[in-house]
Length: 149
Image 1 (cartoon, rainbow, N blue to C red):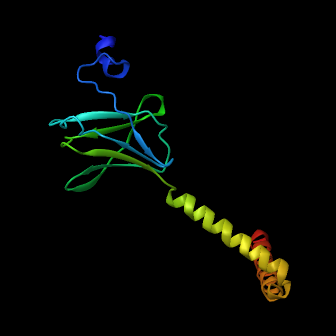
Image 2 (tube, rainbow, N blue to C red; image 1 turned 90 degrees about the vertical axis):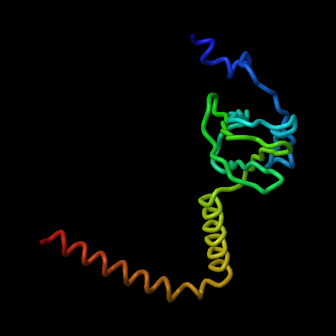
Image 3 (cartoon, rainbow, N blue to C red; image 1 turned 60 degrees about the vertical axis):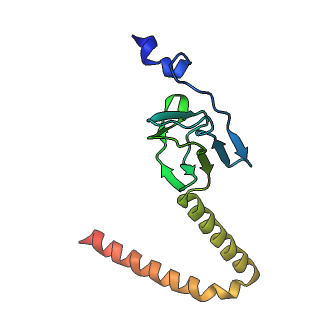
C-alpha cells in the first residue's frame, strides 16, 4: 500500500518524466513541459528547489502566460499542478524579493540617509529634538496623572 501511495515520489510511478531545468541567471528556471508533445490531462510537477517566500510560477505558452499556485511538498520542495501542458509550453519558476523585503530595505536606506544628514548637519535636527522632548514630557505628566487617579 505505502509503496503504491508514494511511487510518484521514489520514481516507480507510471508516466514520470525527468525534466532538466534551464537556469537563466540564478533567479529563473525554465522547465520544457511541452517539449514532447505536451500533456492533455492534469499533471503534477515537483521542482526540487527549496520553497521560500519570493518564488512564483507561471506556464508560458504560445498564447501567453498564466500564473500558477506553488504548493509546499516533501523535503521543502515546490509542487505545481498543471491542468494541461500544450506542446511547446514552458513552466517558469522565478525568484525575487517580496514586498516586505523591499520595504525593509527602503526603511533601512531612509534611516541611513537620516543618520548621514544628522552627522553632516546636526543643526537641522535641533528644533525637532526640542519638540520631541516637549511631547515626551507632556506624555510623561499625562501618564503620571493617570496612575494617581
